[in-house]
Length: 393
Image (cartoon, rainbow, N blue to C red; front, side, top):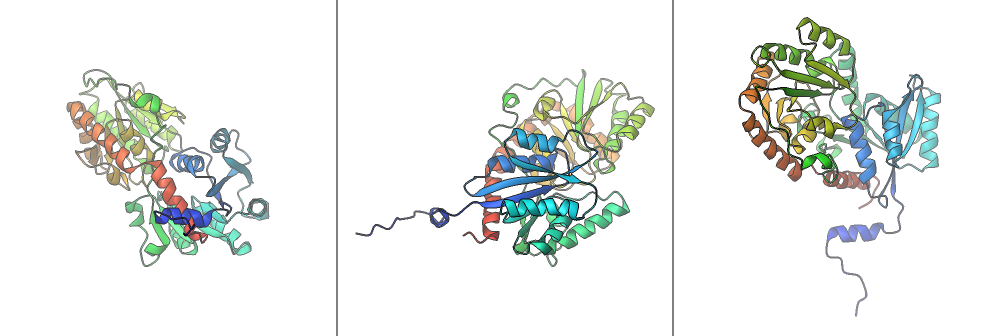
């Protein structure tokens, strides 16, 4: 009688072939201190990868002038291997050599990047470690200035030099021509949520009733920057307050536009109704205290704020840009608009006139996240991309 094991599935056979092999060693480079959408995705990836299959390290570029570093601190709190790399603003040996040292000491198989500068570093590294495999993630691009437009073009041009590119939405994929980046070299891998733990203490608590005649609080989450349309949102609020005088707005985020937005709020007579809460660590608690999430952006990749708000059953009015329309269906799970002042004003007014319609849409949005945006599924897909690139079946 044969004593050979019988495998019921191709996955079981695949696992058996890899028994005894060391895990794939990945170094993810990040050129940002913030636990923003991409930052949270990196942290959750590090927390959810199977260490028997992937050994995950994070390398974070840290400017000398910075004090506390939220991304480094958050990684250490989670027990994720992280190295702070002194960044003096140049791409010389003082930055490249420590990264090479990590690659050699930890026997890194694959270098993963998240933005233009870390991708540029990866190309320099590749010349000195040609066997290293390269993966980039495209979160989308901000092109407010001619400099940013040049960076966007160079970033797309560089994709051809990566072994694989992960793109966070179909909308972002459509911005990169197939003739330049073929399907075999790219995967749309949408952002996701850790459904077991994200906002678990808030998830099943009843949300406060919405009274349009009482105080209603909106929140806009994201970098305070021109592409987020926050000045347009202030003008929409100005148009709405004569009818709804108790309407309030919070901006959750920091960025170069903060002083300008404060000035606009003062000039519009909204200073007492608009609050700048800065960088928020506990987003679920913030969502529990507001009535409506408003995304006023002119451009997005696939915004985590939409996933988070939908999962926690917060009503949403959002511009149909980037991957937002891949998460929210208009009049089914939220209210989608074009990024114009009139449509933004009308969308918020619709919520104030018929809040219960938005509560029902929020419940459908929650169900959509449960079905389509599990981080466990995303992590497995990412692991298989890594395994394929390094030659594991």
